Length: 256
Ligand SMILES: [Zn+2]
Image (tube, rainbow, N blue to C red):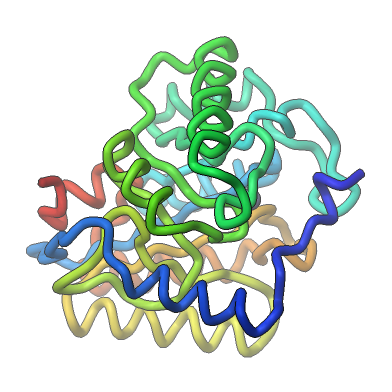
């Protein structure tokens, strides 16, 4: 099934375009929290991301879950069972944030703006029909792919748009393409996540982590439970707040 196997272009022009798009800020926001802010986010999302919710809650925080509604109640050959309406209800009741992620897992860099708008609209309608009553104010781009025009539109509709280009959000930032750090199983991924957390704590910035499934034996797209546990506990020990995306943006003063 194409929806599980699509990979965005890795051609040199596409790579250059990606850099230009990140550089062209659709919003000029300032990230300046009083304390470091750490946000854990889960994309698509598999039911095992509930393990991530459990861990973040144990440390007194809440997380963000970006729901791609065409995957609702499906089974991914790699990530396992995907969320369903009861997963959304449980997470909302526990105070976590449900975000949008397009309906079809659209590559927003390849689609026309009207297609992006319609796909995200369909996503929001499907979330409402699945019982989500909270205002959906967080969005994450599938594959992290976007355009300047899509970022402008996302900045009008959502408080935050999350990308996947790594980095800590601090000082001047684009709230319609926030940087985020992937959590995975490899030694390199663990090292990078620890370094980014350290950087966020030292600079009093906002680090957003993202992954998909969470378990003791995650898929290549997922994170081990013990890594989420380690990062959450280190963050709290260092005085950081574990906040879901919209609260994170409020704590950072990025709402404009
Ligand atoms: Zn995704």
